[in-house]
Image 1 (cartoon, helix red, strand yellow):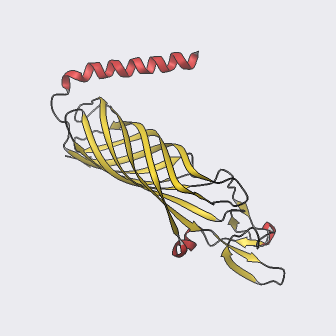
Image 2 (cartoon, rainbow, N blue to C red):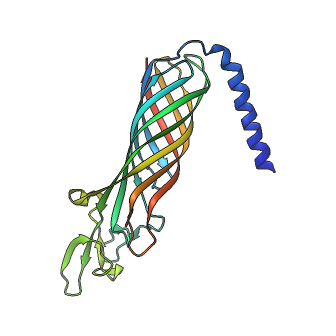
Image 3 (cartoon, helix red, strand yellow):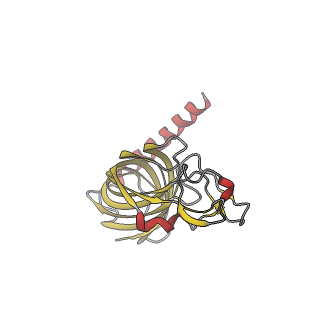
Amino acid sequence: MKKIILISIILIWVQNLYAQNRNVMNDVLYKHETTYGINFNTNAGLIGGITVRHTRAINARMYHYFGVEMVNIRHPKEQRSTSRLSGQTFIPGKQNALFMIRPTYGRELILFRKEAEQGVQINTHFSVGPALGLIVPYFIEYRYDNRVQRTEQYNPTNHTLFENIVGSPGIFAGLGQAKFAIGGTLRAAINFEFGSFKNNVTGFELGFAADFLANKVIIMPLSENRSNFLSAYVILFYGSRK
């Protein structure tokens, strides 16, 4: 019941703000803007990825934009471990790393408009586009029983003992052997813009993203894998507008 009351209060507050600002929507606040952001999401680690977006005005309340985003998608079972042989870290059971590249087109609606050089602006938006999954082999340094050490993509058939893993050269070591998966993406969000200067914008965005690939991506072969990925995210952004 408390959650329902809280949600109701927030909705009423947003509606009141929108109603108060309908009369000041007679002119376009800005014609275009370009923003850059850092993505934090529930499918990644500390930093999920980066995003760039270019927005243009349709009218005083509606804008449209083109953007591109690249994020890292981790398997829920991933746990970093330390090798007893070397002290280096690696992710046991990981065969591939997945990076999602999202070129999108979206529409943005101003709910509450701020003054040119002060206040907070609240926007809501929705975007869709293709999704390009970049599947990068995950390499490990494995020491066999005959003391031979090789750097290979993890394979549960060949690398049966995690205690024989010396370490990993890193996620990007397999870029030269990367493969692609095709799909689609959609996103819905609300963002809050701040700024003390007319031509600059800073803020954060809260939203949900969904990626749908045509085929299942094997990130960890000994665990369940998926072709669809849902996430909640936060983007911290900065940019300029005219």
